[in-house]
Length: 631
Image (cartoon, rainbow, N blue to C red; front, top):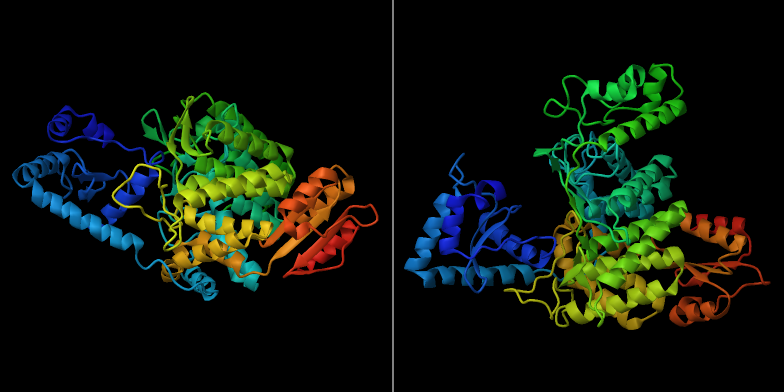
């Protein structure tokens, strides 16, 4: 629409004569996007972007749709038809048009705030699993048909359901999906990182845009799959995502950029596709032909006459055996080839980079990098998380503590939304659990409280999307749907439960309970649309578990205990460190759970507690490992 219509002089003439045109960046103003997308869905039965809304001067919408061409074609009205007609109706009877807007607003308000609350029930978890099982694509992985979005929180919920019930099918669905996505063309096999979604059911052809939030959430799921199964391919996927983000998506001062465009030189995917001759020219005949065979690069092509490198249906072990090659040597050889292709690709015209730094998405990547450090032990991930956290606090937090939503080119703007607070608190909780630095826990508590002050609905529970101090739209909505990104309310539910447990704060525990009840009705009606909320629900219904380690973090035995406690998949466990001296006193003051825990015999000591009962403490790493396996 930008090229067809908004840059067209005829369309511009009509708009400038009869309308006030406003173009909204939905990442900067998700509050506007959420409300008017709900309008579009209510009025037309569908939504999507671009989103086209026409409203009265007091922001009440009376016309909504998505894409409109300039002229009518393929049975779709064009802007040159619609705009003059609406302008004529407004001039002839603006009161009638305003009444339509008023009715729509009332209906949307009713829809947005009704049927949300209900009784929290463990049965909702089983109901969700049954629906995932029903919609699972056993051949290709993922759920439903094309287009397919990664929606990694679906997979993270299923990992927890497997952990809860032992149902192998839950783990099988996760592994098939993770493997299929990684092997597909939606993954950039040359430069790493995932694209936004696949336009087909096989994960072959992506929408080539790469989003920070997808890569943060997917690395979380791959790390958890590695923790649970020990399979190195999942750790490799997470490591490669982090390589991509640190290399291409990181501001010099530490914040993470938002996205990379799908197109370059006017063509979607041009940067990412290959021809066999091109690959052979870069790699030489022998390696080039081998690479093309492995990665499905043919003369015919697999995408509009070109080729998206992929490993769909390919098994490296079988591929090597068929060619009488050593699998490990083949893997090393293909990595050398990949690096050469990457260096060659650098000289192409790159897709545009959206270098906005969004507080919410940075919160997700801080969480992922912190989990990466805990799981894989690589110090650079912890440093990247710390630098991003510092960047947000320095550049996107005002003197009064209020978070802002967006930073770009030296300017921070827009009062933060509930997602900014919830996702950043999530990041700080994980950063505390990775580093054991109390300042991060303190920041998490401060921002969580400010979130409640700004967004909490005292009457009905739940968090509004924008704060009481923000620009007032025609209604204050509460977002609970966990789509491509989890909702702020779902993440906040998890944060509240964790912070209440850590601090022993009864008030936070009550708010967490109200948060779950505030949306239980909506979640029970459509549980698979609320997978992050289900993760919070699973946590609430699981017995609490704490692993407390007392000792100097610089001591080798302490470090070994921390590594053992952090490595496995224990989604309901909290690992806590009580160091020596004044810092240990600070920990005991902030976290009552550890008050009675001390070193025994002057040696690093571990306590494993489950469901309010502690096993006997141990000074031995091996014994700690045994205790954890019995959980």
